[in-house]
Amino acid sequence: MLNYIDICILPYKKAEVVKHLSVRKTFEYLAAGKPIIMSDSDLSDKSILKENKNIISYKAEDAKDLALKVKYLLGNKKLMNEFAENNKTLSKKFSWEQRVNESKLLETLNTYIPSKKFNKSKISIIIKAYNEEKYIGRCIKSALAALKGLNGEVILVDSKSSDKTIEIAKKYPIKIIQLKNGKERRCGIGPQTGYLYSKGDYVYILDGDMTIDKDFIKKALPFFASKCVAGVGGNIIEKSKDNLAFQVRSKYHIVNKITEVNQLGMGGLYRRNAIEDVGYFSNPYFFAYEEYDLGAKLSKEGYKLIRIPEKMIEHFGDETNPFQTLASRWKSRYLFGSGQYLRRSVEDKHFMKTFNELKIYIITLVWIVIGFLSLVSLIWSYKFLITYAIITFTIAVLLLIKKRDFKRLSFSFFSWNMQSLGTVVGFLCRNRSPNEYKANVRIVK
Image 1 (cartoon, rainbow, N blue to C red):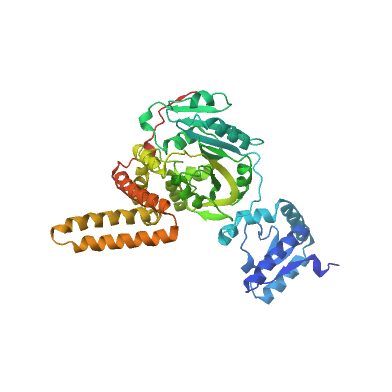
Image 2: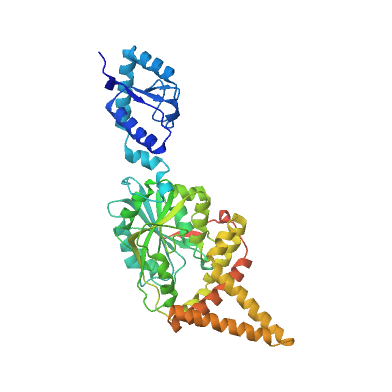
């Protein structure tokens, strides 16, 4: 004679907590291979719970229909045995880890839990370089060490270096690609060129004056178990202690907990499938801000970027005077990148997001314009100019109190003004589509 425990009856529950508990209980009974009768109001997981395959459902809160379904199942021993076997088979393919990864739970909680192994995935590390003979050897060695035990490749994209960068790089088991035309040299061209020649399921971008931690990729890969994650970055250690151009931004690249971010400035590991949804890895016509552009595009596609509290890279920036660094960035047109990004955001319909990211430069630009107008107003009166000078002085004093460092404040003012002017020039640059780009390169190795 059948015992009541041989059949699991799951009633309809209005309370969400009880309902979620009953879902877990459902899978416990599935694993035990028990026939199940459950309310049709709980049939939310069609991939697991299939009527007349491993369950029978009754109309919610209809006692008569429930009684009929119980009677029917009790009178059909063959069907009970079939359900039991189906549930045993199903339970072997089931795991809670799988259910969490396939659900929206991780996105809902904004918490990312590493839970999968990626031993078979291929990793591409793309190194972009220009005249990096001082650092390129250690950079390549670190990339090869980071891929140890993984299926990976290292691709160096050289922007027509005039020093020994290529000569040094040839000593290592990597692919080397070089631009044919040095005039095409831009921050965005190296990553995109390397991406076009790469084969990895996951792509990491690394600068030639950096070294990647040997364990970072292995620590980052599990976070891609959540399908909403498109890129993972880590903590960046600035080795250039004296150059304020690098130090002022270092605080944005250090986290002490898993943090959702808008962009993975200074490199990160990206999911190739997500990049394909965007259409390109890096805008090859951008002089800078290519990672901001990628972050905005990924966000628009519904993806997320995270930075984890793990050491990712060490950056060996040049030790020149920070003002010289800014001058060099103007000469190389690096400072124009913010304007290109702003203009591109108009076309891609994320202008307000970009405006918020660049607000300090835009505010500075507005203040420069007001200053110019105050000078013009001297034709009629000096009051406007005096008011402008007083407000500017007051702002400077307040910032000095906050920063407590006159040198840093001076650099900030100079940097903001240079970058704001660069934003204007970059905004006026021709807005070319990344899809127009055709790699003009030679394969060195």
